[in-house]
Amino acid sequence: MTDLETPVAPAGAGPAWRRAAPALLGYAAVRALGLVTLAVWSAARDKSPHQLLSARWDSLWYTRVAELGYGYEVRLPNGDVHSNLAFFPLLPWLERAFAAVTPLSHADAGLLVSALASLAAAWGIFAVADHAYGSRAGICAVLLWAVLPVGIVQSMAYSESLFTALAAWSLYAVLTGRWLTAGLLASLAGLTRPVGAAVVAAVWVAAIASFVRERSVPAQTGAPRWPRALAMLIAPLGAAGYVLWVGRHTGKGPLGYLDVQAGWRNGFDGGYAFARFVADKFTSFPSALAGLALIIGVGLLVWLYVICVRQRQPLPFLVYAGVVTVLALCASSYFGSKPRLLLPAFPLLLPPALALARLRTSRSAWVLGGVAAASAVYGAFWLNGSGPP
Image (tube, rainbow, N blue to C red; front, side, top):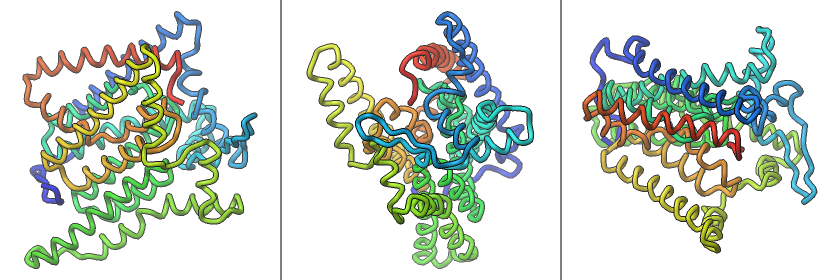
């Protein structure tokens, strides 16, 4: 099942809201638990949970773009230049739109966008998992995404939830043959985060695979080709348009965006910087435990991806998850942000979701409930500490 020949849900069993309701209600409950735990933890530390969610780290940069537009930068003593051009525009555009039609501030509009997008993402994850493996697997996949240790980011005014929603629904559109929708959503994902390239790659590879399959098996020919070709054309327009605009804005041409990222010390080095970061942890005993944990974590990701391949996940899933994972691990960005950069790689959760789906409902509920509690506590601790820069 490494092409698009996935099991098709029976008629009337598509991702309608009634079918997705258990997954969405469970997701909302997990997120509510995380927010309540954050509120209690923050109160004990005399901090504002609202500020932690909407006015720290990247959320401040998005809010500034929404309020004042692009052009703001910070020059650090070491010579680095942090420009808000590094932040893709769809989230701040939505923040500005919601702030214009509601009494909300731009920061609170960001929280509203994140809340709505996280529900859309949960529904999208359910849709693709349900289509490929059935509703129980879909519910388990959504709940696993909710209880990830860094799941609290899904409730922040960050772009991960918005991107995941667009990516999941684009993949669903590919699986169901809605090529123009897939291309449009991929283009919007490209306006949200640089990793939008993963969605574009999934659309392209799926379309090319369908062309090759039709060529090798003429009997399957019948569906018009132009929607797939047009989807391939539309998919990269969002990311390409923004990158070219940044190049023109900075006067540095098509590669101007890379210079902007370099100012943040972001770039793709094949994992060299991350490997050095992990190796440096073994210079002393206490930090060596952290280094060992990082190696185990990366090994777990590789193992999950291998299982995805062995389970013959649909090709768009494999391409998308693979590109997201490689870009997250092989970028020279701030290493503390890598866990949240992996949040959109939800197809990696499908193997454990399938395993949970085979358990009795009561047993899987106990497992997910325990992990949800641990995730809520960790999220509150993390956000009140180093947090997700």
